[in-house]
Image 1 (cartoon, rainbow, N blue to C red):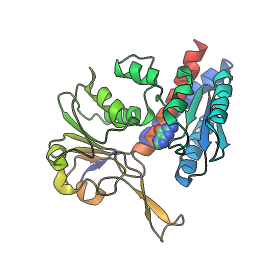
Image 2: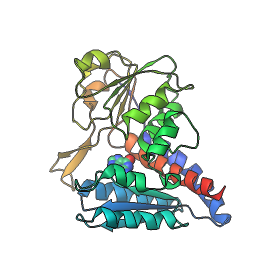
Image 3: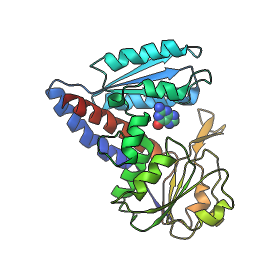
Length: 291
Ligand code: GUN
C-alpha cells in the first residue's frame, strides 16, 4: 500500500513556522494582509475563499473578502482592484477564479499590481517564474506541490514527471519548476488532445494529475512504485455526508494506492498546501514591500 502524503500535516508544520514570522513582522509594525475579491456566489468559490481568509487570520495576518455581485462591470471591478493596489495595508490581492463570462479575466489579472499578485497569475510574475527569478510570486498550487515533494524526500533528479493537464494555474508553472536546476526532472506535459494518454502515464516516476475529472487515472495507467500527486477537486453527491457531497480527486485512489509508492489523498493532500503557499506568498509580499 502506498505511503500517504499528508498535506494537512505538512501544512501544519509550515504554518507554525510562518506564524512566528508573522509575529516578528507585527512586532516591527507590519501586519501582513490579504484581500480576496469574490465575484458572484458560486458555492465552491465561496468555500475556497472562506478557507483562504480564515487561514490568514489563524496565522495572525489580516484576511478580508470583498464580495461583488455577479453582474459587476469590468470598470467597477477595476476600481475595486485600483483601491486595493493603492492601499498600503493590503500586501496581497487575489481575484478568485473562475470569473463570470462577461468579465475579461486576463485583463482583470493584469490589473493587479505585480508586487501584490500573490496568485502569481500576472504575466510579469509568470515570466519571472519562467526564467527562474526569485522575485517571482510562484502560483500557490505548483509551489505547494514542489514543497510536498521536497519535504517528503521524493527523488526528482533525472526522474520522469508526467503532468496531465496544461492549465496556467497548475501545469505550466509546475512543468518549469520541475525541470529547473535543482529538481532536474524530465517533464512530459499531456492534455485532452494527447493520443494514448496511458502510454505516457505508465512511464511516470512522478504522476501529477490536474484535470478535474473523477477516475481519469485508473490502476492500469500507472507503473508500480509511482508517486502520485492528485490535484483534482471534484464534488460527488453523497447523501451520507451532512453537506450532501464529498470531494474526490482525478485518480481512482483505492486502486492506484495499491500500486503506488506514495500518493496524495483528496481531501487532505494538495488542497491545504495551496492555501499554505498563499499564506507564504502573502508573507513574501509583506516582506518585499517593507524592503
Ligand atoms: N480558482 C481555483 N484555484 C485558484 C487559485 O489558485 N487562485 C485563484 N485566484 N482562483 C482559483
